[in-house]
Length: 195
Image 1 (tube, rainbow, N blue to C red):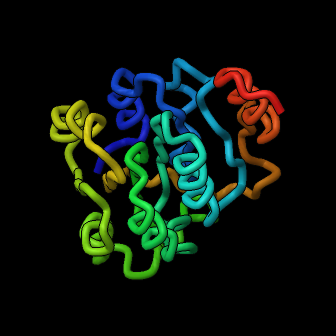
Image 2: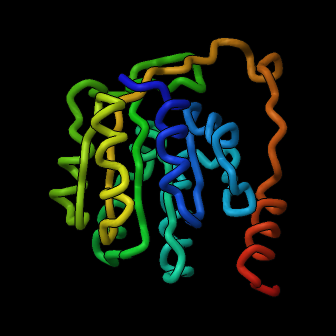
């Protein structure tokens, strides 16, 4: 398994001008690696909805590369979205799945069938243009440049180390983040979209 911080560290130099959004506990580490926060979209507590939102961005902004760092717990809540993505074939969409095998945000309960699901195989069977799976950071780093150049939709599953949170919500470390409206306004300004 790979630390999510290392996934993001390796990814950032290959980001280019991609618009990036994340989900899950692992996704909280992205702001520490991002060098272009104006192109980061925060979905906040949208568990189960982030995939659909990123897919919508890919359809609505076809000239922009859209990258989602999803979590398997969130994806399982809305698995049907994979069929919609495959059906529309957004060429600008790269869908990373950070699979830690647990619901880390709520205390580390195992995701159902957590060690047996082949998410990349599922994405391939449903019709994603390209799929990959990684459990080794060096393999991921070596292939990332090529993956980012592929025509989407691209699906990349990565086994990551769980970062389980056991403290009650109110006692957890609060990271300073922009609100959803603030991130949308920053992206609109970045893209020159007037509303």
